[in-house]
Image (cartoon, one colour):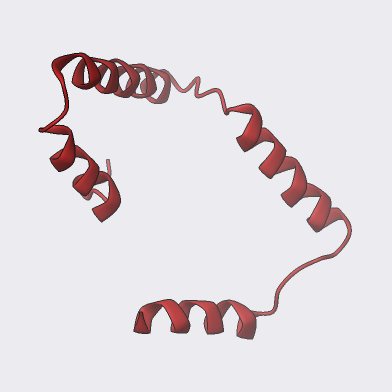
Length: 81
């Protein structure tokens, strides 16, 4: 179990306090649906997620990788931000 919530989600949930009851109900419904799928081990990716996965697999098959140095450069850039 993850005992941490990313800041973006935490901020969104805080803003949701000011939403209408209907909007909060919809957010709750979507979260419960996701929770049920994750708990059942039956998460179904969206078409966008499937397309991203396919792009990644195609890149691997074509041998397109970044170097460890390139990865570290990206992390270093965002650590400073």
